[in-house]
Each structure stands twice: as structure tokens, then as C-alpha cells.
Amino acid sequence: MLCLLKPMIIVYQVCLLTTTIQVVSISSANPAIINVWPKPTTFSWPQPQATLLSPIFTITSPIHDHLSPAVDRYLRLILTEHHRPLLTPLITNPITSPPLKTLAITITDLAAPLHHNVNESYTLLIPSGSAAAKLVAETAWGAMRGLETFSQLVWGQPSLVAVGLNVWDSPLFAHRGLLLDTSRNYYGVEDILRTIKGMSYNKLNVFHWHITDSQSFPLVVPSEPYLAAKGSYGADMQYSPSDVRAIVQFGLEHGVRVIPEIDAPGHTGSWAEAYPEIVSCANMFWWPSGIEWADRLASEPGTGQLNPLNPKTYQVVKNVIKDVATMFPEPFYHAGADEIVPGCWKTDPTIQSFLSNGGTLSQVLEIFVNSTFPYIVSLNRTAVYWEDVLLDADIKVNPSCLPPDLTILQTWNNGPNNTKKIVAAGYRAIVSSSEFYYLDCGHGSFLGNDSQYDQQAGGAGNSGDGGSWCGPFKTWQTIYDYDITYGLSEEEAKLVLGGEVALWSEQADPTVLDSRIWPRTSAMAETLWSGNRDENGEERYAEATDRLNEWRYRMWSRGIRAEPIQPLWCFRNPGMCNRVNQAAYH
Image 1: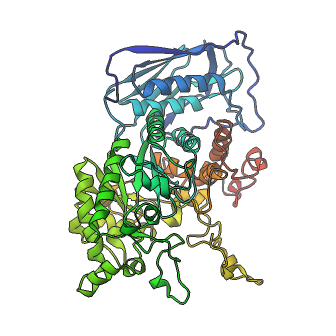
Image 2: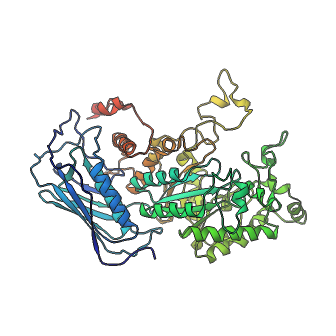
């Protein structure tokens, strides 16, 4: 059972040695309003006021398996962070009201699990002239979002907290995620935990773990141990079942679901290290010389696709699915099914025979899906596939194979156009359009012996796209301005569950993890939480710049090594770094 339902209240308190508090000046040459990221749905602070945070500040909360550790964590953060804003919030009152001593959390439904579409709303009331604040939420997960907001309303040393403030908040989209590929390069457990921590700061709630691919199989599957023993990069680059338990538990304590992806039948070259007999075209050169692109064996180095015509394939695959479903309690199971390359299957004698007897490669894929999809569903899981399974130009299944009520499709090509195709067909969609949400783009190609860069006067390797297939680099503004329901009717938009940015790891590893993800992922986090428009319907990317600067600085102080988006000079000289002088239009 995930939650303790005892109607008990626990008081969390951290004792600090500081007993004498001296009020410091909070004036600023460039006064600012207080910053909360992502921006709340409704934020009322009519007379900007603040009071001291008591050094014996406490949080009272119902006992809950996952909220209780979160409360303890946030209490320590609130009392010890002493954030120094780049621009100090301007407050209008002398600090004469009593220090804030308590935050009382009330939750209506303690039993609600962290599943898709769980209620994450909360109300936060911090009155002026009172020593007590209130946080009311439907679920423990909404309370976690409210705790994050409260933590951002505290700053300085001694700590000040905004008062006379009322927040009502709820996300626009229920699915707000980040994909991390841990196959092409390995990330330690500590890197994954730090990423989940950063996600919780940004009110993101889905860690999509693309665990395996053709390059390596780092997950230790108890019933199929040889997959990792032979298919990983080494014993020190594997994820054990205890590692998975720690990551899933950490996610729950931070309000982040962990969705596993075991991509198949494509992207499975690493399976051949343990079972070469079930993998077609394994360990072959990905694009042989003299072969047209259409006849390549893989879309990048690392060949291999499971052979759906070999019965042993399903013995191994079903063992993997069963163990993964056991290790991950999350109701969504991502089954991949993207980038099935015709040339690979055509090298396999059994598939050649099937084709010579009138069969098609789409039928080969259908055999695989019809053999695995019902098994996934039988484990009480909703199957998630990449869009290719229905939209690929060459190899795809008949929609009758995948009932919309049991299937979710994730987009990555052709921006809003493919999202439109998916929802128009009645499927729920997760949007990861590579034109907007791929974080790895614009860093060049990882291929060796590539003559495209030998262009002294400019050329393909230096043509403004970063030399990568999905270039250019996706700036935070590109991500922030993307409307994932663009061009959809009101009914179609209801089928969009949310979105995910993706960090594919051909050219990323722990050394660049934080800077590749943050603060660009923060941009998506805000747009999926409260949108990218103000109360008048106007795009708010201009005012978001200063707020994101401030938020990036605070994330850095919390141990998330987010990259800068501007020189510090810009923040200290408001408006001077804008493309247009806004003052000229007022």
C-alpha cells in the first residue's frame, strides 16, 4: 500500500542555532516582484509585504508514505537556503508583523496514487499579521507542488517570507515530462536522482526513462540476466533492481512518476550480445558503402532489430516485459516501436522467406505487436508507443491492432501535423516534437570520417543548423513559445495529455547533463503548467526572460548546474538587452 491513511498530523521542525535576528535592508536599485517558477495559475499579492520567517518555523502535515519525506526535505530547504535574489523583491511594509511560525497542510484524499491525471491543485494562503500559513490540497501530490511554491516565497538572511498572499494553482496538462536516454551513454544513479530533484523544483511529474537501445542494455532483468551481463557497457554501468527501487521511491517522494521504456522491436542490437539468434542484422555496418539511404540497416550506428518470426523472441520479450512491469509500479509501459528500418529485416533469411511468399514488413511488425500488446495490457498497463507504429511511411500496423482506449502515442516528427493525425484518429497523445522539444539538437553529428564538415567556405557542416539532423539548437524561447495543441479543435486538444522534452545521449553524458536539460526544460515546465500567455491572452515570453534568469540562478544554488541564458549585466539593467525598446511603445 502506497499511503498511510491514519488521520494523524505530524509536526516537522528543524532547530537552528540562530536565535538573534537583525532585519536587513531589502531595498534595491532595480526593485522586482517576487518570482515563482512555473508561474502559478492565480497569484494575488496586492500589497507586496513580507515578514520574518521564524527560526523555529514548523510544518504540520498528515502522515503519508511519500509526502512526509517531502515535508521534511522542504522544511530543511526553507530554513537553510537563504536565497539571495539577483533583484530583491520590493516590499511596501515595515517588518513589524510577527514572524511566520507554521505552515499547516490539509489534504482531502490521502489515498490518491501518483498516476496520470491525479489532482495536483493546491491553495496557499499566507496572511499578513498572522503567525500561521495554510496549504490546502486535494492530494499529497498537490501538496508537494504547494510546498515548492512556498519555498520560492522565502529569501534572504535572515529569511523573509511573502505575506498577504493567496495562490490557487493547478496544471494545464497532466503529463509534464522529461525523457533521458541511458543506453547510448550511461548515467549514474546519482545523476538520475539529481535530475528528478530538478524536475520536482519545476513541478514536472514524469521521468520517461529510455533505458535500453541498440548501443547498450544496462538494466538488470532478473529473469534474463544475460541481457545486461553481456549487453551493458560493463558491470559498473548497469542498473540493478535495487537501483530501480531507489529511483522509483525517490520519484514518488518528489511527485515524479518513472515510466520505463524498453524499445522494441527496433533499437535492439544490444540484445544480440545475449541472444544473437533473435536479432536481425546485429553488429553490421549501419550504412554500407554504395547503398542508398533507403536501404540502410539502421538510422545511426548500432544495428539490430528483433525478429518477430522467431518464437524464441517472445520468450525473451515477455520475460523482460513482466520483470519491468514488476520493478516499475507505474501504469504506463512504453513499448517503443519507432524507426523500424526495412533494410535490417530484409537481411534476415526467415523474413526474406516470409516476404517471398507474399508477406509484407508491415505484417511482420503486426505479428510482433499482436504478440506483445495483449501481454502488456494483461499486466494492467497502458501501452505507449512512438508515433511510427501508425504513421511511418514504410512499416506500420493497422490501427485495429491498437485500440485507442488502451494505447497512447508519442509524437516526435512533423510538429503539430503529426499531433493532429494522432488525435484525429482518436488516440491520446504525448507531444515531443523534435522541432521544438529535442534537447540534443544542434551539437553537430557524432559520425566519424564525415566529409560534410570539410567546407572552407561554408557548407552542409556549417550551414546554420548545427550539423545535426534535428538542428538547430532548441533555445529556451523556442521551447517556451511552442503550443502543443496548435491547430487542434477543442475536442482534439482534450486528447493531448501533455508533453516531454527529450535528451538523447549520443553526445551527452553526466558531464553535460544539467546544462543540456536546464533551464530549457524549465521553459516547457511553465508552459505546460500555466501556459505561455498572460491573463489578456498575450504571449509572455518577454517578461519570462527575467523570471527565468532569476530561476536559473536559484536552481544553481540548489545544486542544479543550469546553463546561463544571458549575461548578468542584462538582469541588472532591465530592458537593455531586449531586441525592441519597449519603452518606445508606451
